[in-house]
Length: 245
Ligand SMILES: [Zn+2]
Image (cartoon, rainbow, N blue to C red; front, top):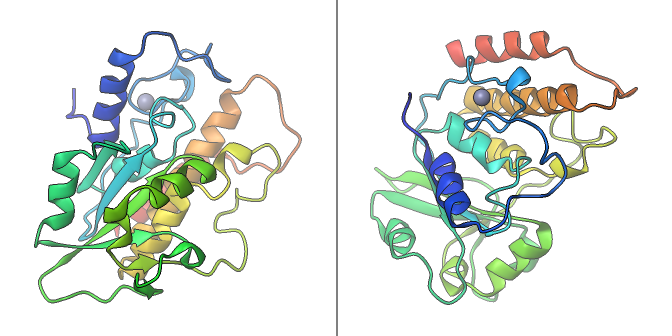
């Protein structure tokens, strides 16, 4: 058994605390605990973490952690230095706050500039102080939850806010019908940040990993869909080439 990453650990902790079974859409599917896909479509055999000089801090809304469609997990699959904590309005996690203060990292909050509070720096590229590693902070939840998390957390208002101008869909999947769960997915935005940090190949690998996850989810769904599909094998081949370089 390989070591669990931050999001997998958080999932198990959260599940242990849960008094009721998770009853959202797809609750009846027999899932692989590691990738949350139906066991018949488990993609763990091709999962491989990347060599990367970026770090992520996922601050997850409590309701997000148990959702099989959560795409923050895909970031932790690929980027070894990924941290994940459940957001708490009144008692922010001490370890999380210490990470934000850690001199080895340079934090950026990935969030739309329109929401920045007065005085918060707004940047659209990643410029690093010498010797520092970028720490991309992402708020993982619905859009409504993310806005609340930002508003109610003063520590998120003290770091530069990094935004990306989106001219169109990021991946081939964003505009497909029936993919509302995945629209503006956390993993897609993360791939833009990785690209901005000078790791375009890693950015592509995370995008493809996300697409594999989407495709495998759709394939596992009982209803056949008429919309455009990319063969899972083709995506897997692309991914294996991308992680080799
Ligand atoms: Zn799996």
